[in-house]
Structures are given as structure tokens and as C-alpha cells.
Length: 217
Image (cartoon, rainbow, N blue to C red; front, side, top):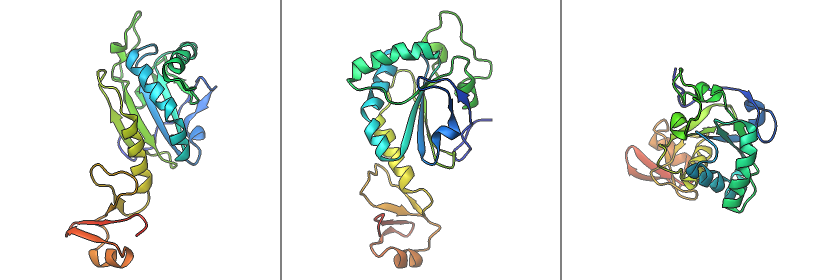
């Protein structure tokens, strides 16, 4: 069955460049971003890992751990890591998880059940393994983004999505299109307008079903 928003992220134990990781234990009580890749030593993936390296401080400020997953063994990851650091000019401070048996890719529904790794494969053989997951402290999947081989991920957008997920977690808010931190949020329809006016003094009623407020009221 395909994974859906609010499903518990499948737990796993796997080798990584930072040692053995058990996902749920590693996440702890914060958020986590998992971003997967079809092969080491590929150009787009190298630029993406470099982008995450440059944003490491931003994820840390948000109490969020980041891990890459690539369908290659750890010894390949360690060699590729040096290329990423050369490209980005920044150290790779997050783990790169090995999924050379496709166990994680299949558990996260990133590959067909019968998928395997042929000898002499290229990244095209595992092309669907280009997915990003945001996972909450409760270990539930909050967001999934899937990219084709030809489109590099926009990690500024992934960071924006993380901000939106965190801002609306457990509160009756949603974010409008193109929202960025500091802008008004939408009050959920579960809150009647009269109640919303009482709870949020700055309430802006744009339409009967579209009410906005600042996060601090």
C-alpha cells in the first residue's frame, strides 16, 4: 500500500556514513528530512547534497535532522562525500544512508516491488528514488515531494515547506500559496468566524471561508 500523509514513517535500521542508524531513535523528539537518491557520483545528486550541506545551519535552527539516502553502499558514499564537499565548499555533516538492497526504497514505496539492481546499472535503473519526506516528532509523514531525474530539487522550497509544517503543527492554521515565515496564515474552517474574531484580534475576513491572522494573533 502506498504511503500517505500522516502514515507512520516506516522504521528501519541501516548503515550510514555516520554509523548504524535506527530511524525513529535517530529522529528523537524533533523533525527530520529524508531525501533519497538513485546513485552516488551523479551530477544532479552532487549539487543537491551540496545544497543541503550549505543549509545545514538552517535545518539545525529548526530542530530538524537531515539524512540522505542513496542506493549504494557506505564505502561508495564515503568517497562521493569528498566530491560533494569539493563542490559545495562545505562539510557534509549529515548521514548518508546506504540502501544498496533497496529495502528502504521499497518500504517507502519509491520502487516497484520487483525492482532490483542490475550489474552495470545507471541512475535510470533507480530513477524513482528521488523523493523527499518531512517527518514529524510523532514519526508521521507530514510531506512528500517527488522529483524526476531531470529536475534538481529546490531546497529553499523544502525549507519553506518545513517552516509551514512546523507553523501549522497542532494548531488550527494553514498556510496560503507562496507563504513565507512572518506572513499571515489561514484560520481553519473548523473555527467559526465569531470564535476566530475572539481568539485572533487581527483577524482579516477576506471571504467568509478565507480568514487570515498573524501567528501571534
